[in-house]
Amino acid sequence: MALDRDHALDLDTYLARIGLRGEHRPTLAVLRSVHRAHALSIPFENLDPVLGTVPSLALADLETKLVRSRRGGYCYEQNTLLAAALRALGFEVTLLCARVVLGAGPGDIRPRTHMLMRVRVPGEPTPYLADVGFGSAGSLLEPIALVTGAELHDSPRHHRLVHPPHDGPLELWELQARAGDGQWQGQYVFTLEPYEAPDFEVINWHIATNPRSPFAHLLYVQRATADAHLALAGRTLVVTGNDGSREERELADAAEVERVLADAFAIDLPQGARLPE
Image 1 (cartoon, rainbow, N blue to C red):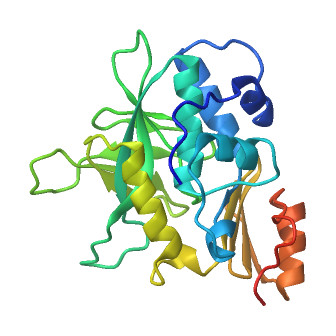
Image 2 (tube, rainbow, N blue to C red):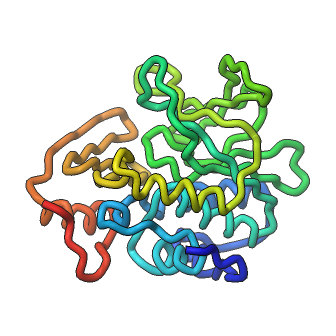
């Protein structure tokens, strides 16, 4: 679907969706509060590909789905929406694309498929990395300064940016999260080459339809709360508390998955849709 570049985001409704009121100015404090509120309010989910459709990245459709409905989305949807909101607030946003390294084995080279963004704050000397669409317990809750060696205590999480070894012509950045054992764990790597919305239309189609893409056939849902991180992969539900506690259980059937989606993740299936057994 073509992007509706002329559609203007209903900023007040978006801010109400993420529970924010107050000043609408492009300050660092506003960037942090919008990022954190979005991350804690709109769940990560790939229901559309699992149900056989490609998620639309048209802003009007994202507004209907993520803002006005009890739904979420994956990175292209989440970060397209956040980018529109930040631009409406007066920030300068540049889209970037990352290569996920979390869970990759030695020698694995994955394609660049993850959407994130560089944000300029008026009056601030350095840009910030913003990303509300990673869908992992190691994802950012707040933006991190895009400077070498930056560390961020986005409580209860802890992140840093480093430069891993790299032979390419562009400087390579890696976002790392501190794991429960105290070790730094790579999440994804990226360069500062700008990407445009049509680039993500192509990547979105590939991720949603390629039979080798895990998002095309297995349900992935994530939700960050003030107290815990909830993750559902297929029928495996994992709840990780901020204190490091971990509970895992298998859901019995599609009906229980639907109940957990509604009750724990605040997600309603599209009208008439049924999850595969």
